[in-house]
Amino acid sequence: MTSLADAANLALLRTLKPSAPMPVLFVGHGSPMNAIEDNAWRRSWQAIGTELLARTERPQLILCISAHWLTRGGWQVTGMATPKTIHDFGGFPQALFDQQYPAPGAPAVATSLAKELKSPATGAPLGVDLDAWGLDHGTWSVLKPMFPKADIPVLQLSMDYSRPPGEHYALGRQLQALRDRGVLIVGSGNTVHNLRAMRPGTGPNEAYDWATQFDTGVQEQISTGQLDTLQNFQTLGAVAQQSHPTYEHYLPLLYAAGAARSTDKPRFFNTGYQGAAISMRSVLWG
Image (cartoon, rainbow, N blue to C red; front, side, top):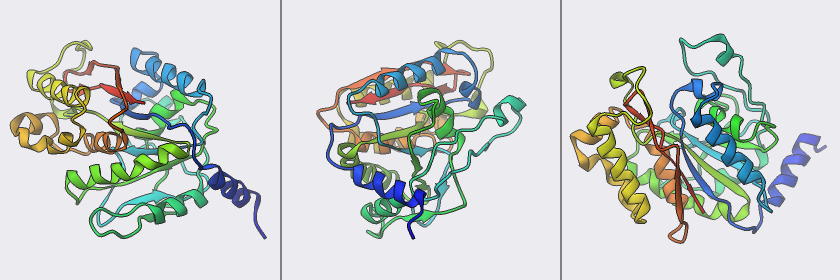
């Protein structure tokens, strides 16, 4: 017998059919506190959500690629019906740990997409995670301000951190087609992310020279449509190393850029810094 949840997911799967293309988002999420503080970053997320919900065709499903779900030996898609809210941080006020984002999952869609998408490394289908993960703060901290009703199903796609940047961009290219089926692609990371270099108390226009150099370079490549060159960030040497001592926060940009099309005009927002070493630059394509 088919349960109500199964029926709902199969119905959702059938709705993923040709539609007006959904936009693509890359969101600089920065500090987890942005999820609950009344600041300019969060207000921008709220405005973007209002804009997306005002479209004639609202998103039917959100596929989020967060800097905080890294796997090795393959990519995974969350396949649970009710993904848990993960508080993957420490040292913050209890109010942040109390946050929940009860958006539904979409098991039938996850299973279908995992078969449809192929590992750039092997050509094999992606894996489906049924209980290990959920929605981490890279996902819920930005989606909660955008879509506070939590009524749009959300899937997370992991990033195989053992694979080179070019393969992450290649998988992003596969996500392009989902935009025509009502799926909103959201990459959540930061174009510059160096926690050890942060200077608390600095303003949004204050940043290290290496941070502004790297962030400006990313802006220029996006503005001029040179999206495929974003995967070559490591060739910048010391500037790239300072901007990303580890580069998990950069990789979600490659998925979003891969899902963008040459006809999409990028629109930047939240073009500032937290602690002089985290760029909040965000982009909407389409």
